[in-house]
Image (cartoon, rainbow, N blue to C red; front, side, top):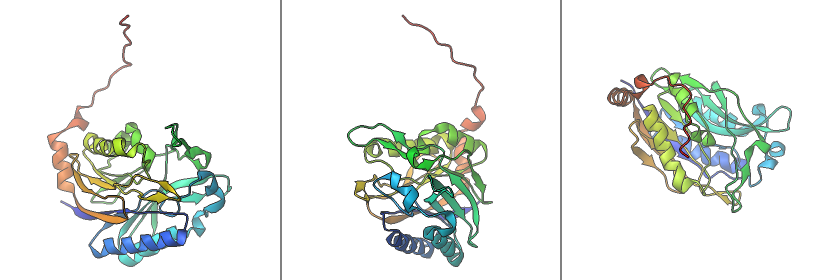
Length: 279
């Protein structure tokens, strides 16, 4: 049996990177003081802008990003695993940015990165249309990280809507799904909670979903960070202000949930569905 105290930190990130870093440091230190072994930040923890076309000129390359440097220093000082939900990092070419997750070890090493696979390109109407791909280059591979006690499956925000990604992560051994986000206030009230619960239930895995809250450079985001059990229960939920959620992840609960609902072992291969005309 393994139990890890895990924190999902809800931030209100703005265009002011220095202020964002101060907020991150305060909440990470609070989580570590409360005993957190694994701490997760939300999507775009380093900077959030109203116009995503401004990111390539504003963001820094990886070696110069102050938030990444801060996260590495905090992980090493505090002896914690730090999942920097995602940071917006300028590509070397300068044309676009990566929406990139970092998993940092307790000695400050970057263990792995994950680039967001699915960019948020939507036509929601009423001024809520968005084309993330205009500034963000999509990744091309999924990532599962084996930490011994748990295996983390990495994803970012809009990835939440693509169940085949999480199916692949769980097939590769993931039992904790990291879903940092900056969710739309249009879809958030109706989609955020049911999608997080669905990913947990269908996978028999914990979901750790640290989110952005408040105003993003004048544009509101949904908030409501959550940690969900493998059975689909909300173990902790934030409101619309910066805060830290802390929950004990229990490896025995994952095993027991998967024993009671052995859907992974009950998968069947099916052929192409038949299309039947009813008219």
